[in-house]
Image (spheres, rainbow, N blue to C red):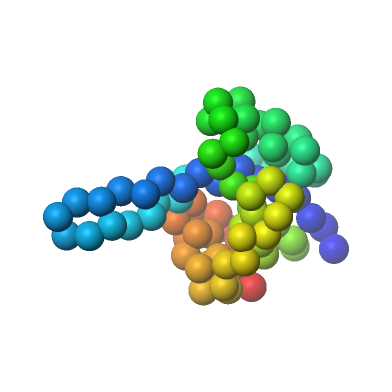
Length: 90
């Protein structure tokens, strides 16, 4: 299994009609989690980002540092779509 890691930022916004979460990423893939984490710190300036785990071209996990946030396959598919990642979630 080919595994890589990307940095994903999430932003919560609210208005009078409700709240929503937006996801963004530059989709740069790294072969090691620690490289993606370093990239996230450079981009964000803090630890306020997530790590996406890619296996065989699919977003399979949404993590904070090295811990899975535990998102469902449906949410992973929404995140992949929101960041424009070509691989679909499993």
